[in-house]
Amino acid sequence: MSRIAHPAGPRHGDVLPADYPPAPPADLNALHPGIWPRGAWRSGGVLMLGGMDVRDLAAEFGTPLYVCDEQDVRSRCRDYLEALGPGDRVCYAAKAFCCRAMLRWVSSEGLGVDVCTGGELEVALAAGVPPENIALHGNNKTVDELSRALSAGVGDIVVDSFEEIARLAYLTEESAARPNVLVRVTTGVEAHTHEFMATAHDDQKFGFSLASGAAEEAVRRVIASPGLSFAGLHSHIGSQIFDTAGFEVAAQRVVGLAVRIRDEHGIEIADLDLGGGFGIAYTEEDKPPEVMELARRLGAIVDGQCQAAGLARPRLTVEPGRTIVGPSTVTLYTVGTIKDVDGLRTYVSVDGGMSDNIRTALYDASYACALASRASSAPPVLCRVVGKHCESGDIVVRHAYLPSDLAPGDLLAVAATGAYCREMASNYNHVPRPAVVAVSAGTARTIVRRESIDDLLRLDVG
Image (cartoon, rainbow, N blue to C red; front, side):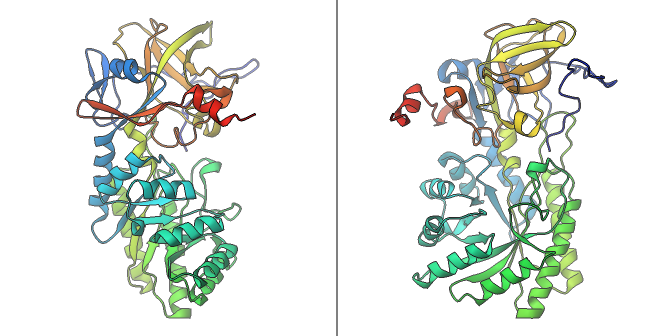
């Protein structure tokens, strides 16, 4: 869960906690490491991303604008590969941010790609990702999606229901394909995250329950289907997780299932996929583990559980998405209306909002933001950065200290917006979705173009 150090703000009749308002940072111009892209710095007070002046980016591409540092993405892919080692596998979770350029980057760095819809599958194939390096997820895959996966030759299909096993078995009767199948196991682990991001407890839509015996029955049905090749087990406990304790419990339970599979069927699983969900820092209060330490812990967990169970160690797969693309991207906004509310805060309206970042409204997410187009020595004021939509909940950053001389036309930068912001963007209030620009070594190019009013009207056929 994105952690909020302070409440949403006072309302009439509220009893305010002792730590409200939050304390201002020591330096408003500082870029806290771990939150901003690795290549971000200030030149004369101006934020530089991928060697590009944000003022030039805003002038050329407009705002709101997602700015993605390509080299930051690539370096994080390499971190995971180095941390896990050659015997294991890293798959980028395309749902974090999916476009052809992004999937080409991660694939060229040696990562596989996991997709969870037919649309994501088509983007991966269009990007040139080798089909055998693609894994298909989803709790309600259609017959068309499964057929496309079979015809494309995707490497793994992760099954989520008995109906899906039956659909897949039927489709393989008339196909030469014999797909590798992983069974998604709901381990009952309560991940310490937002309730909408927890995916391993029994009372939710994903996977086969371990406690009820459904997971074991799913394995039996896959093994009994001549057209399916049982490859292993999959577990995913949630998202934005900092503590590896949940992974340890999940691994223990999944390895226990693997032992029972061996004892019943004489089969040792080839693959153990522990999913993703690794957290990143959105604010200074967030302290996620380093990738190398995270990988070391996961590897030790799997090694220890398999050794204790007398089981040959399977190939370990992890599926990072947020930790690959999240910190790489900054959203640029232009300041519009500024409204001072005496005794409370200053409302700073920007030219985007919940249509380009729904996470604050949906998950109570927190973000760090900064004045990006210049330096300022003015004293800080407590602000709430809000959007232009007709909703009181249209909040981008709940608590931000910004310079008191902030003015319309200034550029604000919101950090760590690479994961899920563009993917969950909408056209609410008929606001076109922003462009995504890739920056690298002082150059910039559009990788997802800005929507136009013509795009919106083209779909309106009435």
